[in-house]
Length: 95
Image (cartoon, rainbow, N blue to C red; front, side, top):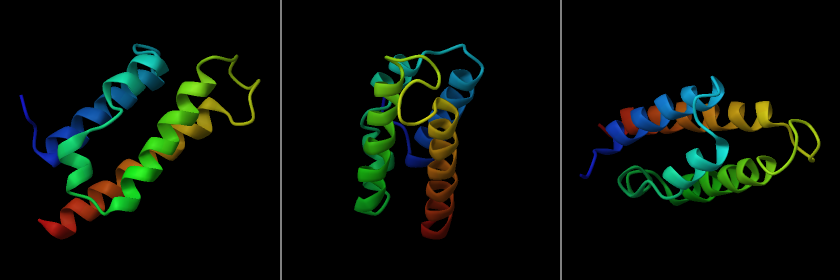
C-alpha cells in the first residue's frame, strides 16, 4: 500500500519513537525506512542524501555498544528527529 508523503513521515516518526523506547531495533528501523519513496520524492534531493547518511551511521552504531563508536546513538536519534522536523516544515510549505 502506498502512503502519502505526510503519512509516510508520520509513520517514520512513530517508528523513531518506538526505537527511542527500545521497542524497535536500530537495524529493523533502518531496514524498514531505507528508502521511503513517496516522502523522499516530495522533498528536495538533499533530504535523501542526509536521510541515507543518518541511517548508515545508525546502522553502523547498532553493531557497537552505546558509545563505543565515533558517534553516539542518542545524537543520531536527535539528528533523525531534526530531519523529520525539517521535512515536516518543507511538506507544510508545499501543501
